[in-house]
Length: 291
Image (cartoon, rainbow, N blue to C red; front, top):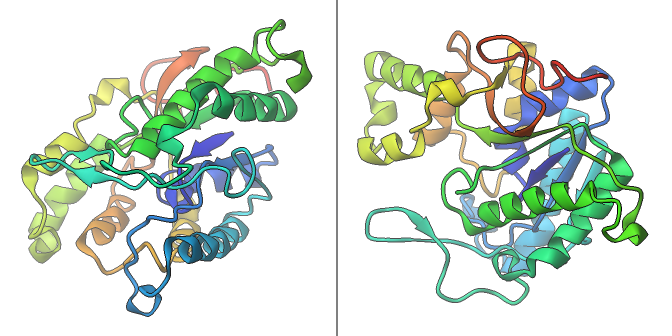
């Protein structure tokens, strides 16, 4: 089970993992918390869309991406449109922070227990062995990502308590909780490679901002799922989000370059549950679990 904040997050952060386990016959559930109504529109012909219209448009983008990845079990947390994109702002140092004014129904302002209960019901129904979401900072500070982290961690604990809300289903203990993270080795190697072969690709990058964003201790990486033959599928899934992704922007060019780096893949940190066996990052999220 993957818990993501907005449409496109799943295709930018975990498409190889999702498509791999679909191909292997595992049950893969994607939970999306908001419609992404306040996402930055990058396509001129869609700039006229209001937040409500953008949310509706992104439903179609997500549907296309899921078809590409083969994921058939998708759920909106609390139902479609229950929670709205909170948007984000930046401070003087370029750090992502919540906006001063939030839209009505913003996920960032959601009651934590209420939102967690929606996920408790899903966890008890789907009974996942592994759940993946963001870290305590939402990976880069977006308030909806932070809230997705909080909801997932709380719901995973509550779902296992037999006396808690029996009306939401039979208790279920998630075996392993993972935090999706950046693959620091791959990004650093890609950045160095770009400086050598295509320096214009990284001209606009702020080195300090890059350092903050990818400042992950490699020793904390518990598992890496390689792109392998799925790189093109991952690219196609992300390309479905025409309103949000400019494939010619330096960031996404660099992201594509990371896939050519030896050892590159989607990285995960172990947050709770059964440790991975052996030394070094595992290449299977279910390693060491009874499946």
